[in-house]
Image 1: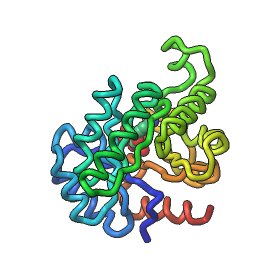
Image 2: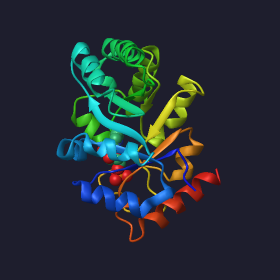
Image 3: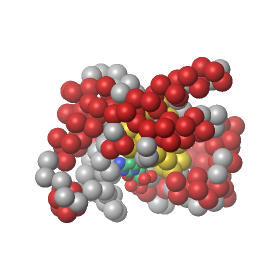
Image 4: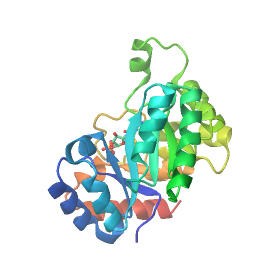
Length: 237
Ligand code: C5P
């Protein structure tokens, strides 16, 4: 049943909660996202567990610092079984370029597969009022395309972006570029703190390659049924 384009956000606080959710979702989910909320609490144990369960892992730590620090930070994460790692595109071209170079070198040196490297464009929780309040006058959409093009030029494999910007990114960055979209809400679901959202099918139609879904699955009465409904919707596209 699993569809590797669906990534479930493991935004829980303990290994007990991880075990419970993974067991409940069973074979219906094959790809999980571990973010700072969980990783800062339980550390590498969750990655070993997911790897043992034969699940794919997106380690979403959103690194953002000077080029050398981010590149070395990524190299420190490379042996933790993550299939995908990320940085903030606002760290700049050189930060992304050096990260790609060092991660490729380190993976080759260690004889392990190179993880996909993607860049966060603009957080999906930021709406146009927040954006203006932060002092930016350029339209969010244009800035997202600019970050995505910069990430591509730096050799990154893709970006994290809102499903609402996926079509424009797909057009600018080509068919092989990964577009990972959080801010997914099935019709009628709670929006929570997200802002630039879309349904699973709309996100895929817009060109997303992967969907990150957290609360609509985790907070459902029956998380497995919620995941399977999303997968069925994805497969109809
Ligand atoms: O619960 P929900 O479906 O909103 O979860 C979305 C997940 O995607 C969260 O883990 C959040 O940190 C992450 N994310 C996001 N927007 C981004 C990048 C990551 O919502 N731009």
